[in-house]
Image (cartoon, rainbow, N blue to C red):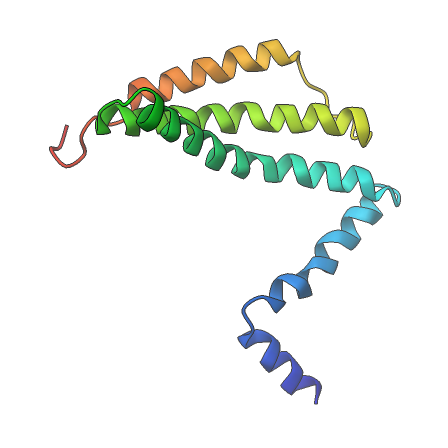
Length: 137
């Protein structure tokens, strides 16, 4: 009976995530001496890198197509820069929040310094992005 249960679990699409959640959450609770809020804060910090990439790119795409009405080439380059900015700055905001409210004690520099380096990283990605990959340039 248990073997059949695990065979059905293997074929399920959403249940493996629910099934693996205890294996992720229990060690986090044990590692941080039962302080689940610290573990949740650190998970939020790691998850914010992916969210930063997605949101930064989407925001840059919306700005370049609807507000600035730039060409497709500039849109792609701005999206790459937005991805870099989101990746570099959103985790800092989440880390600052979790330090203040969840007690994660993540050591960081000032928000201004992180913002400056996120802007520099976004400019670098904007400049380095391929202009037109179809043409081979």
